[in-house]
Amino acid sequence: MMKAVSLQCLVLLVFAELVHCQVPFLGACPEMNTMQDFELNRYLGKWFEAERYFSVFEFAGKCVSANYTIGEDGRLNIINKQTSSLTGIHSSMAGEVRLEERMDTSKLNVRFPSLPLWHLAVIVDAPYWVLETDYDNYSVVWSCTNFGLFSTRNVWILTRARNPTLEVMEQAYGVIDRNAISRAYFIRTDQNNCPEYYRR
Image (cartoon, rainbow, N blue to C red):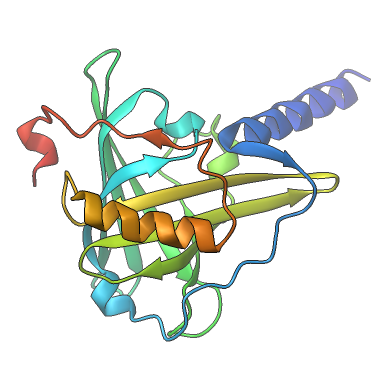
């Protein structure tokens, strides 16, 4: 009996983590048209987070960046860096990126096995779909997971420049609008006064 209760508690905890990792919406994930003829090699390198939907992994995070590289084993790796605006603590997460289909697809999956075990929500693969990018200035990334009657969603606007121009942001907003994604849930990422650690 005790084991059954413990298992139920564990399931509830995992479920709670999954729900709170992204913004919940009623209904299933909407259909999205991702970028065609995606060129992975051009996407590699450093991206700065300009705006995002709420995510518990990035709570109070500033100076957020992601660096995509191909390792010696041929795997696509990602290192996310951020600093807490509450504590000033710097942190980084090493993750793995896997192609969902062909090499030219913009539908990717990511996982961060380096996180503590209690963050079970990110040990499973999470969708990372590039809706559109020009490779040199901006990228709009979509993630959505179905849970029966509702879904959880996240969206990121990434830019090559730490502080992008208004023109670059307008291009990204155009992608958001064309895909009928709500702007109401976006949080602007603070990229000011970032430590030298995050400039590399």
